[in-house]
Length: 554
Image (tube, rainbow, N blue to C red; front, side, top):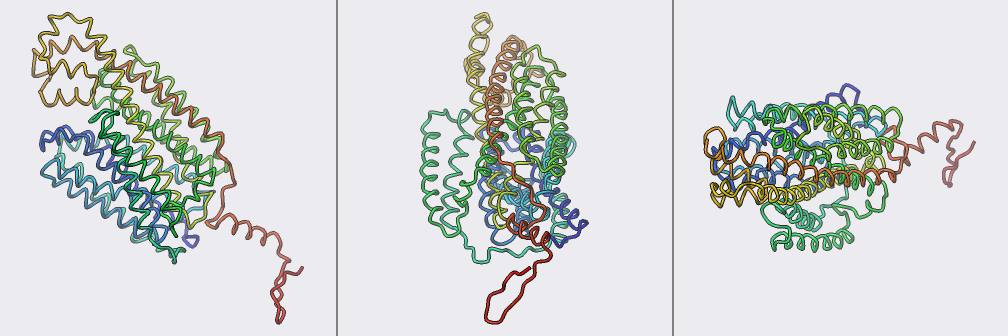
């Protein structure tokens, strides 16, 4: 799209950013409304599936639609993604049961995956790699902005309007994004006219991804890691991975070309994105839990305390993008980002029941700064290393591995927290007088000592164990408060120790990231080198002789 004016590029960029903000906002705005939704629709046992359904279908759709967009063009698929997302949002808003809401969230996830797989690739269509850093930094800032305003907006809408408007609010924003894309984004004719859809590859990819993500989503929460259900899902996933490799090695036009993995830049980038996402989502999930459960802040205040982390992330995203665009250096940015994340995780691992809000905010600022430096550049690095014909598939691959990293990271961190919390709770409860423990019904006591945070939350919601409305429960529960705070602080500390390991691994991997010059046009590196050579040798001319091939003469 070299023929676009700068004004046209900026207009299209606004539409892409709005679509990206639409998907990112939906990930954060729904969480604060979930308690109200459960009270209205019931189905507490399906609580986690509202988020799981979106994640499963979003992640699964990313590599598939990234490849399809390479074949048929990105504009149509980006429009399709927004349309599916808006349809899912409208249907979520009219849901009459938890089952309906989960199904429509899955539909939303498909739309979100299509948008995510094409948004970064569209930036690659419009801007050359040398300019791309600053604009992909803005996309990282859009994620940070969604994380800042999402929880507060969700709470405000739920308290003052109706939980259904948490989904309806997507509609006007999506319509505006559609208008920008339809009106200003030109149709790019595909260069892969002879390409065909790899149906077997798509099928085996779904059969590999879905059980794997499902296993990591349910493990440690709904089922034990060693349960038949989890092991069975992982075995199915492993078998289908082997089948996928065989299918793709023989496919004419594979949905995931195995040749990508011959590139060290690709392998290092997807590994780094995997590790960065695991660390990022671990911080976002467990920091608010520490603020609420240990420090004792309200949900609203915990959201406000998270704001500095997101602002730091937004600031660093913009700075890293500008730095890369001006200098062409990206390896040092990746190293600095993982270094900052590792240091932030170290600070977070030292938090305890005596930690203050100020200390927590500082820790989150450091982690956020590292995330902001790292996340925007990895997509750009891979896009720069491959031809424009493969832009969609390599972009969606990086995003896919990021989503998988987030899922696996949260599962492992959640298991670490639950196991350690159970041990710490068991130790603390031993010191509580037997007559006090005898006052609590066995079922409640068993749940409190299980160490499963999710089950404890479900207990509070299901049994109405409210400190405000049940004085007897409040008196008994107060005796456990100190024990629970200490157990929670120690268990979350263990989570961040694992975060240190993840981010140090990312730091190590970043040192092996090859640094190649960022292309200054949308042409391939070979084409660009040829044009530069032609520009440097103007005296060369072509002479056509009869019955002979063209010769280059001086």
